[in-house]
Length: 232
Image (cartoon, rainbow, N blue to C red; front, side, top):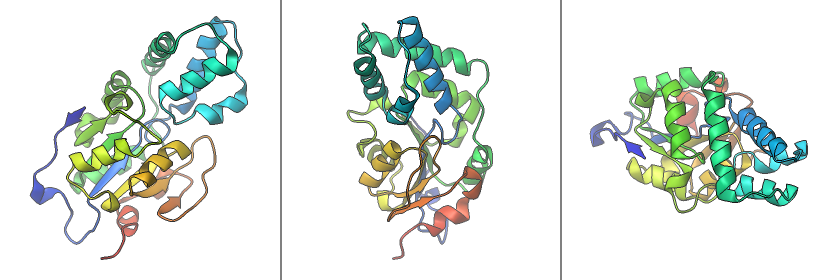
């Protein structure tokens, strides 16, 4: 994991209860959820299996151990989880090597958070090798901390990744705004006690307490995130 946490005096913008912003990666900042499904379909096709499109909602947003394990069980493919993980990571790296599209509003939001010195973390279920490749497109300078799925004992939907990120930034989870695109990521952030903005990518997400649902990242800016924070 990487960390360049700013000095204590710069952690919170004056007059704001917002202490940090924690951002998911796939499907939230970069338009890659479809990439993962395409790679999974290609790998299983080489193994002689066709993936049912309805499974896409099952595997989206989860850690590779869960999604890959589900697909092995569902197809009966003769491959181990470790072997499949290697093939999926390799296939994804090849895909993003041909260009990585950012989600609408992502570049603008990252620039705004940086301009106002808001501590920002990237919190992903993807492995470190994938995050480091994607960071070349997102700009590593935008993040004080990055957390990968293979660097925590329990990844999403458990709260551990977001608790770790908040702690690493010296922030109260309740004063952190999280932006996520899947139910799995939302569950992780809510279990950590964060304020959540859901921007659904593949499957719909319903509004709920401490959760605001918007159709696009273009609706999210610093003023919007500050307004999510509890009073007091």
